[in-house]
Length: 254
Image (cartoon, rainbow, N blue to C red):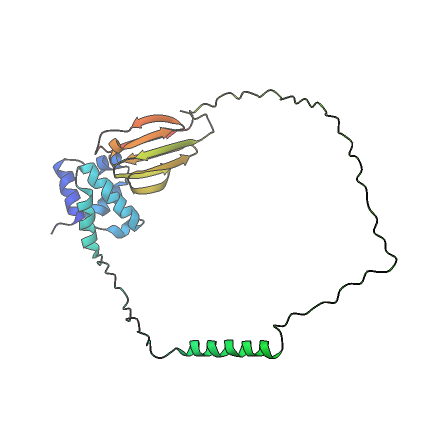
C-alpha cells in the first residue's frame, strides 16, 4: 500500500514540479516538504503541523486531503477508540411487607417528642397579666393643626446642545492594526498568520471568526468560495470560487 508521502511525491512528479516550486505555492519550507514525502514526520515541529502541512500539500496538488490524512494515520497506527459503558447493577427491590429501619426509628422519635410536649405542658398557652394603668394619668387630646399650602414653583430645565461626532472611517489607518471577520458557510480549511506568527490552523464551517494583527495578516483558504471577508468594517465579499485555494494578505495602513 502506498504511503502518504509516496502519493504526494508521485503527483508532484506527474506535474513536473520541483520542491522549491511547491514550497513557494504552499509557503511550507522545502526541507519540511521533503520530510513529508520521505515519511520522516519526526523532523516536523508538532503533530498538528504535520496534519496541516499534509492537507495543504495535498490540496495544492489537487489530491483528496482526507485520503492523504487517512494514509498518514494508518502509517502511525492510530488505535480506534472504543468506549466501554460501566456495568450498572439492577435496582434492588424493596419489600412492601417489612418497613425499613429508618421509618421505624423516625416513628419512635416522633412519638417520644409528642409525649415530652404533653408531659411538660408546653401545649398550654401562657396568660399574661393585664398591664395596670398608673394612677393620675389623664390622656390628652391633640388637635390637628392646619397644614400650610405650598406655593408652586416654576422650574425651567435647559437642555445643553448635543455634540455631533464625526463618523469614524472603517478603513484601517496607520498604527490602528488589522481586524478581519471571516463568515464561513461551507467547510473550509484555514491557516492564519498574524505579524509573521501562525495563530490558527484548522477547518471551520457555518460560523464566523475574527482575527486581528498589528502590522500584517495573511490567511490561506482551502475553499475560498465559502469565505466572506469583512476587513476593518469593509465587506470584501467572497474570496474565490468553491474549492479554490487562495491566500490573502493585508498590511496595516493599506
